[in-house]
Amino acid sequence: MTKVLARVLNLMILVQCLVSELFKKLTLINNNMAVTKELTVAVPSLENGKVVEWEVGMTYTNGVSGDAQYYVSEFNNIVMSSDDTYGFGLSAESAWNTQAQLLALCPIEHWDVVFASQIESVFNPPAQPEPDTSYVIPTAD
Image 1 (cartoon, one colour):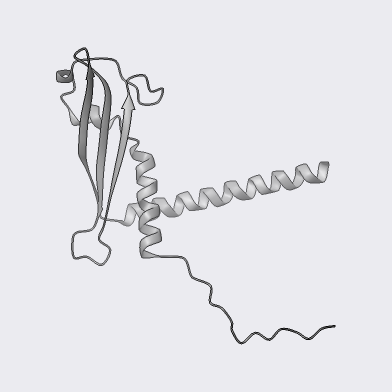
Image 2 (cartoon, rainbow, N blue to C red; image 1 turned 60 degrees about the horizontal axis):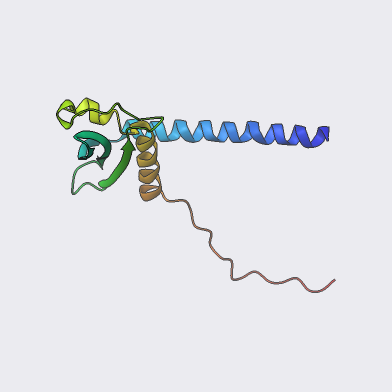
């Protein structure tokens, strides 16, 4: 039992190190990109004159059209007023008068990581294994 626990602990440490390295790499990629982010979707849903739900979205753009590394991705999020993470108090639509209020409803840190991962996989795809068709099956023992 002790050996199993030790192995599990070692695997957990290894996974934590791998996740940490991946996050560092994605952060480095994200910091080196010419990325623009624009709030492109903001649609309120009303109930009795109060906003009870927002659909918010952003468009992420890497580079400019024509660049070798040009890439665009769109992200959307639907937020209910009762949402534990991004929830908001019921208020009239007119109370939502700044982009900052709407951006606060967007999981931007998550979208940043996803976009960096997309860029990495599109422009630096993993190597594909090549079959060795010259391999000879050994003779029977």
